[in-house]
Length: 459
Image (spheres, one colour):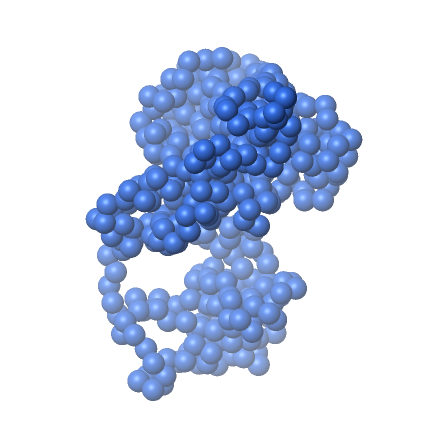
């Protein structure tokens, strides 16, 4: 295993801060108590289970290989593009959570111990819980070596058991063995000095005929990668330059989603934009962004003393959140109210407000706009063609789908947007009733035949 030289790459601490937020996504949600219903369904992202168990459950057949997030399997694959010479070194850090079972045992009068759900130890409450233990492994190899053939690195974690004794009883923490592998390979692309890197992570556990809860004991949870090539430059897959578009399309990412994070690639089980970052106003981990930080902080302060006591007994991270919120200075809490940010200065070409009485000409349900020589308005059928650059990463899954225009909207900057519902969405009627639409710019749709009855002049 190589030394952790990846830490010296510019921007790496910021990338790892985002990775930390992902690592614990869904692990322990507000109100951070074991008794909370939503904390009974955990371990949802980037879960790599033992291969025999995953195959017995036919997970690859059920969910396919084209999605990230909560789709489980025994392997995941990252492919990304880097412009570098053969002497450049690839630094790879694999990170994941390992499940560790914490049980509490009460001390009996005869000196023996009996497992119980909880123990009162003075002013402390001790609870049984499945803890998350972060693990990370670093590897490095030159691009020249990878072009000669793939490199495989084995990962093994032995089973463990720890005991913590106190007057009223003891805490037992047990971790189960885990075995995995990481395979790195590379191929030269058609573009000059452009190399496609592939990193495949596999769970090599042998557990098969068991429950999911037991299989999770041998799983890589929230598995993700950080990649760096100090003497090279990564190419965005979301917004590739023209000369790299073909190579970007050839990249195959399975149950993971690589994005640029400074000079590092973060390959996450959760969809992200390029250059994600934790809001600078956030005072600590397990806070996602400034506005939600404010809500979480205020709601955490409303917990009763009994609820706070249970949260502290549930997990050390929960206890840290409580400590942080309860000691937060007023000026820090004020900062969490939110900050307005814009990528570029906005030029107002239309009123910043609108009411039907004030301007009857602005009517989203009746407006129309000409696209490719065809007027589109409510009821028009279109094919979605989300642009590759600057779009929501989730839009890639909508490319080519057909949709119905529900409204033509004009924003305060004078730009038009089409609110649409997918034609093959079984929940389309419900979304129409609730007014929940997907939004695309006019240059992201293609008019379809059969719109004559909706055609008319743009208003």
